Length: 371
Length: 59
Image (cartoon, rainbow over all chains, first blue to last red; front, side, top):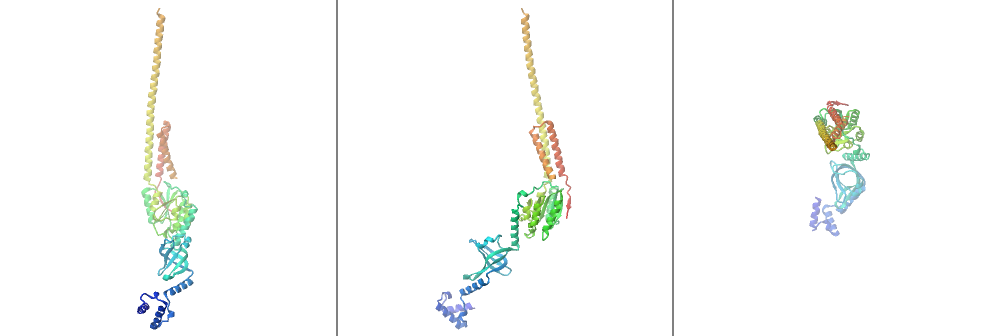
């Protein structure tokens, strides 16, 4: 309403271009009219700029260091390198700026949806009377903190060489028994058994039912791993779980579990979650399969194919032996013919010599007898 | 371990086949190799047949 009256007065006084263009004398004139009409003392009235300055002064004096918890939204990284976003909770939002110079200590991926704790100061942009938090420090919490912890643990274990290919054990083609660690009545277990039955129906299986979700899951999986490790005939172990949220799969990022898998003397295949999920257990395992079914396929060969291979080798062996024998017979015949020819040749020579001798002796006798 | 026996067995059979194919062995040696190969095939086959399909549970 007050705005309306101001405009009215200004029009009356023929200042349609607005109060900002007035000279000091004209402004004094306007203020006098306000006092006359509304009874408002001119000293109580502030200009927009003065009000904005006053707000700025209060904010920057009283909010030099604030700690605010909220969720990142409207995330935007400008071409300048500065990051702008709003921090929100159920009812409100506040603008935040993370200048490039302050980004060097941010070692996680800041993005929409992350819960963060922000430390900073309130700054205002006077020309538009806007305020924001200029961030000095930003820390992930909740899911964000989990992501950071995951990243840091992954780096630590990688440095120790736990994920090195050289540490990975070969998965046997013919394990004496398969050890399975998963929730007993889960779809994952059924999938594994179905695959094993279809590929190697008589494969012997030892199941160690374990909790694969929640507070005690990690300890339980380690317990299951220890149990299976003690059975000499178990040559391959499968650790499986069906799909779930990142939080549900967190158990497979537990440091103690990852170290236990790394220390396992028996080769271990993981089939955790779906294709896109990669846990630290997957990275340390001797083989990472994308799902429980794929893990079962990797653990058990198709027995029919193995039998076919043997049949093929048997045929090849018989064929090779027959070929060998046949080649020996041909060789023998050749040798016999050659020997016969040699004998014949030998007799021919002897016969010729004998005939020659007889002729010679005949000539000698004739020569000697004749007068 | 079944795996090693089976894999070694297959390799042994392949080597025997190779020797027979080369033909540089005496007939007696060839016969011996052939019999050895057949016996290894039987051993490999018995490895595949030794499974019982048992399902155990430990806790």
